[in-house]
Length: 97
Image 1 (cartoon, one colour):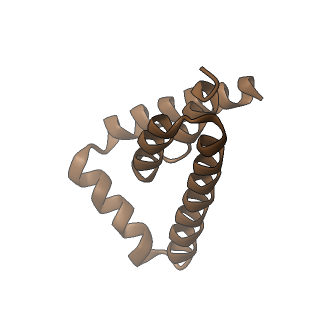
Image 2 (cartoon, rainbow, N blue to C red):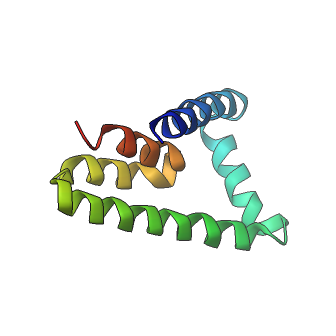
């Protein structure tokens, strides 16, 4: 499972860097908002994305309660809306340290 979490982290990091280079700052924000406005599945995408974020946050909080890794969980939860699955993968990899 650590290998899968590491793979998710590395792939998401690479894709994020690639996307940032193609559409930095305002262009990225405009594209993100455009998904909601233009595409019929945009609203479903947003609700699904943020629903998964909430479920991952609940898992991290439950795990942090048993391990005492509150700070790591908090940082990763705050970073998830921007970086998606990458912080959750990082939490999974670092939670036992």
